[in-house]
Length: 179
Image (cartoon, rainbow, N blue to C red; front, side, top):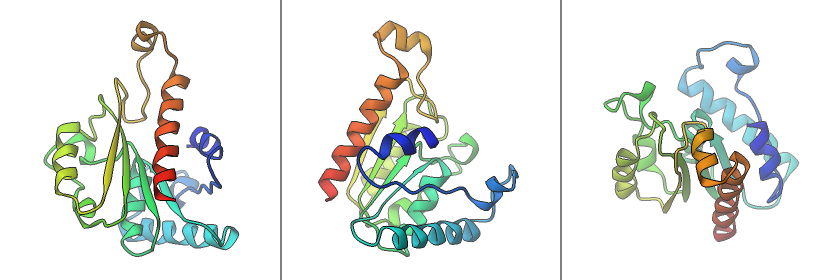
């Protein structure tokens, strides 16, 4: 996420944090209420440092999912999910979509076509049922981390940096619409 923090700082102030379990070197995430509490605390601290302006939450995978939960309790201007983990452990029957249906905050999903945690057909179905204004940027060939295979990049005459720049442009456009 550090790479994205640096990129995103081109379009605004960025605050990053790690959940306690990550800081402590544990692999198993904390229970959902604890993750939400940690996210809300980080949001509160960020708002103290940057008291004016609109807050947009962006997160990679679980960070995006927890940001969605936080937005149900805290007023934020928008959400950006890089690789939303719609299906727990890639199991299409174990969906994490209730929070998405409850959202009223505008949201941008950035998803790879090879992301087994978020099959695009399932995401499209959920998006059509959401109340919140929602947008999707597809990374052709991208995995859960939005990485495209080198062979595919070479065949297209591109680099991963080119792909990431298009993602950043999409995010900047989404942020501009919100502001």
